[in-house]
Every structure is written in C-alpha cells, then in structure tokens.
Image: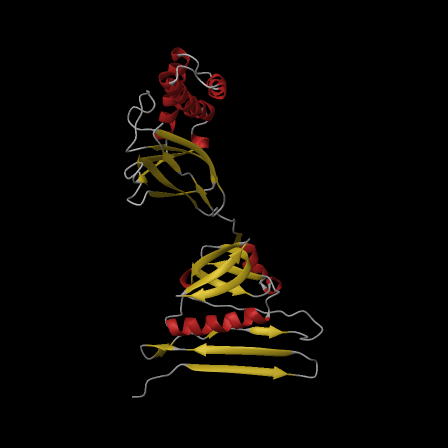
Length: 319
C-alpha cells in the first residue's frame, strides 16, 4: 500500500486589469489520513498603482508537522519582505490582538515586533496573522481584545570588591550580601540619612587620623566634617543609629530581593522597571559603628528602565 504524500499546490492568475493573485495551499497527512487543508493566501490588487493588500491565515492547531509549519512560515516571511510597509495583525488563541510586524521565525517560534518590543510566541499559541489590518474580518476584530505592552524585566548588576593589601590590591568581596527593595514599597526610607552617614563617617575618620598623627585637622577636611554635621560624638552616634534603622527597611522590605556576591565579585538580580534602593554589606570589611559592626555598607539608588540594566558597584576600602 502506498503512503500518501504531502501535496503542495500554487496557482497564479493574471488579467488585463493588472490584478493578480497567488494562492499556495498545503495538504498533509498523518498516520495515512490527510488533515483539513491549510491555506496561506497572498493577494495583490492593482499591483502597480494601488496599495498592496496581503493576508495570511494559519490554523496552528491542526499543523502536526514541524516541517510543514516551517515551510508555511518561511513563505510567510517572504511575503512580509515583499509587503514590509503594511501593518500586520496577530491574533492569539487567548483572544489578544496585536498590531505590529512579523519579524522572524525560529525553532517553532514566531518573533513579532509590537510597540517597539520584539515578542516571541509559540506557533501553538497563534490563531492567525494578517498582513493588512484592513483585511481582518469584522467579526474577528470585534471579539479580540487589543493587547497591552507588558513591561520588560531589567536587571540590577554590580561588581563588589574590597581592599586586601598593598601587594594584592582589591579582591572580590565573595559572600557580600546584596539587598534590593522597590522604592514604592518603602516610602519612608530616607536615602539622605544613609548618604550623610557614608560621607560623615568617611571624613570623621580622616579627621581622627590627622589629630592622632599631626594634632591638627586641615581646613578642607574640617569643612566636610561640619558639612555632614558630625562635629562631635553625640551628633555622629545619632546619625549612625538613624542610618542603621533605614538600612533595615531595605533588608526586611516586603517583596524585596536578596542575593550574594559570587566568586568573581559579581551579582545580578532581575527586576521590573522602577526605582530601587540597593544595600550592599561587605563580607570582608567591617567598621566600629552600629551601622557597620557586622560589615561595611554601601547604599545606592538606581533607576531600571524597560528591558535595561542598572549598575550598583562598590569597593570597600580601609575607611
């Protein structure tokens, strides 16, 4: 008994009215039975003076052959290149409708450009694609829901190192903890307090070294100590406690993220677009303050845009 083979037909009619049509059709069988014919249709009306109209309708439910899917989609891409100026319309089985451009096909996946973003869809999730929105049946257009662009995830990444010694210089701060919180979730977080602690602690330490070594503090250093309001111990201790309290808000934020620095000194966390606070606590350098008794700290405010990365890196030195 002879096996049934796939049949491919293509017809082209041209007339004196400068109208033409191209209709490739594909019938294919599975387990000796032919499935319902699937059609890939492209039509041109008034090719030279008139706009080009093209429509592609695929029912992926009954496409059992990967080779057949590939053949049809390659044909589709050829048509797209011909009618590239047309707006394409994608209908998903979920009921969503997207206006954009068919951009590619790979590994049983269609790439569709929608509102500037390249989205990927399995062929099994697609109901139909039209190359011209004017040719979409009204009934299908009415029942479909226009799709909304979902924000693309970005990442917060960084490199964290610490000063080891003058011979080796900096090394990866392996095991350093990184806490990330969405600013929306901690509206009472005071970044200015943590920032003031960072600079106040730095210049206060320099001033203490000058007093110990030379007995006097340079005027530029003294100005910075005054600027950050850490002239005496009581003022600094108050700032220290408030900074520690604020950093706890990032560490214990609801729906926050936590990760650790790897052996190369890197970390990376996927997040949605937004404004985030990043709190990094060193695993190899600590301090003498309440805030840094278990590890020196670094805090940064970063903005993650749609589908982009933001960087929050630091080096923990001796001070």
